[in-house]
Image 1 (tube, rainbow, N blue to C red):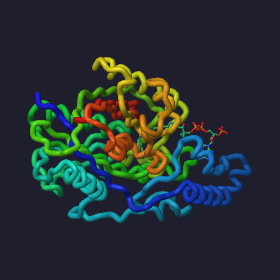
Image 2 (cartoon, rainbow, N blue to C red):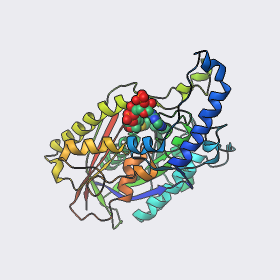
Image 3 (cartoon, rainbow, N blue to C red):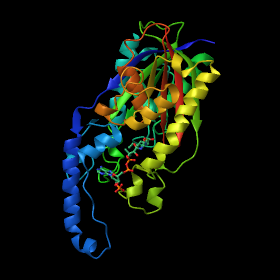
Image 4 (tube, rainbow, N blue to C red):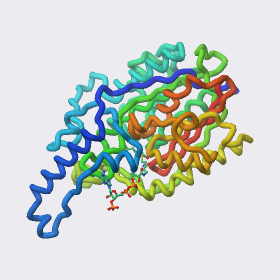
Length: 373
Ligand code: CO8
């Protein structure tokens, strides 16, 4: 079987930053206006007044200091509180495909490849812009790639689950060079009006080239030693948006049509699952966590990563062993662990081991064990 390697990474970084201070200012203006409009109902006890958000809480509870977004004015407009995107004609490249193509081109350049070398594209993200045609097929055409492409969604674990599909396709011999692309436009499916989660997410797109080691030309190659995926049903992170909504005559702007979670529950349940998953994956490969030079963990919450690292190797997250990108990018859903890998691998030496690990809605957990070639 051919060995699969990651031979290039690419990142689309949105043009706008929203700091915690800007975010909190907009939310508090919205809450104040909301409370004034509903003052009578609040006084009668029929509605609950919205309470203020705070920069201190956000930084302490999550480790997030800012996030990148594709469109900023709509998010920060207290009368709107969601991004404002222009609808595009069918013959224009869609927004998701546009950021996907940008990240893919950068990953291909890093791998010394062009679109013509690609024969499979896995577009993996926690939400898709439309039902069909698949975003992956649109990206395939824009890149001039051959073969096939399809979309897949496993929420925050979409990227690691797609990596396994790409690696298996390369190992089976049917695919020589694959792209895994994660266009995460989280700003369009979080509820910016909910102070419990308005600070959590940011937009970004990552891409990876995964190809056969026999023909890879990149100076920076990472052997994929193994992948391990797991799911376990949970309603603790949920979004009910979908094609059935219109037949249910439900409100498209209702709270349950965007991201919802029981943050504490997720924290408590997922940390032990993720640590045990990584440990079991490494053990099956006769490896100890202490042999791993770097963990590129899912970027959801600083405290989560600290606990996972502590359970695995008794060390603190952040810095060299499990670098964080969460402070500047926030949670970018499936792109987070790939983004950590993209930004923090250049210093590693041949033979060094690393683990990419994602965890999130589903629940879903995916780990990928890498060795610098
Ligand atoms: N400002 C001030 N106070 C606040 C705020 C705020 N913004 N928000 C909440 N509070 C208050 C609460 O009301 C509460 O007050 P009280 O004690 O009086 O009830 C107090 O602060 C504490 O609240 P919490 O217990 O909720 O705070 P936590 O310490 O648990 O922190 C976190 C909240 C940061 C959300 C934390 O629980 C966490 O990070 N949990 C894990 C979350 C996580 O990793 N989720 C992953 C989901 S991502 C995923 O899987 C992908 C899904 C698809 C992507 C969708 C993209 C849009």
